[in-house]
Length: 392
Image (cartoon, rainbow, N blue to C red; front, side):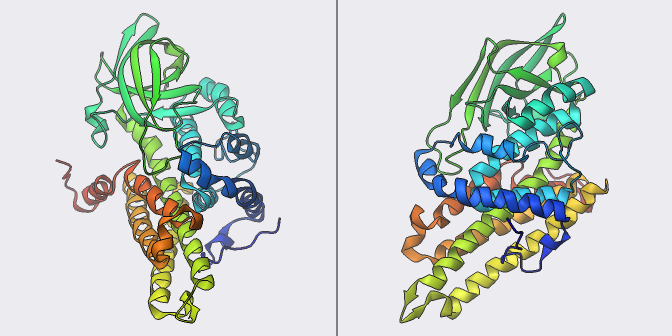
């Protein structure tokens, strides 16, 4: 399939990709358009994740990009951002599945795993032989995870015993392993563990009633005397600072996914505006509609520019926490505005799944909040520019 720059990429940022990266994007885009997009609304309405998309994504090499043990070719962080955008452009839940498997689980092993752990687990996660989840958030601990974790890991000889609970854990109803973050009873530091979900004492229960990211299978996890051998402790995860290294990478990719959600809503609204006739002419011929479309395109373009620079900084080893935090806060805020304007363009038809926009509108709320709320990311940036922490 020939590569074509998206019309919503108004300044042509995709041209920064290499020919090989463009070829990858073209193949992925064709798969998403032909095999994923036609089935997402029905699965979203039923709050079910379509299992058929999992092997399709893995076989196209979407998982494992960026790691020596798994990547098929050298690729840039900008390219990986565009992959996240393409996924979000079709469906935020599919993008979130990849974000958990690739960004959080593979990322945790890539950043904090030993060489032996990386060699053992990363290829299996990339191929889809092993599916993963990432358990940090707890019922009473979200934004304050750095200090507020209540899940405890107690050393017992050559093993660790985990007790506690986790909440909002994506992919957890079908994962084979879960990366569990717990506070050590010995030194009070946060440590990471590779926990097979078949381990006695581990249970995952699907969270019902969600009205955002309905396809994502979020779960409550209970850990009751779950025994994990030392060899499954992430050897490079010795404090929350190490956890934060993983989140720094994934926050930037969530920002790219948010752009994809905005693009998906914008493209659906633009298509509707050119086809829908009111007062004897297409909606797109009306000034107020053009104003909403142009403002939406402006948000998308500004967010792509910001995220492109943040990803370039990552490739050069220059990205810091405050850089990814600003990208996440800005891109998700602009996404939230954009999907609202796009829903407005569709009028009453904007609240039915037939036209896709309401799915993007609802899903945007979850991206706006997860992996660091706008407020928390704002405070990370604020601390950087003022030199003063204002978290409490």
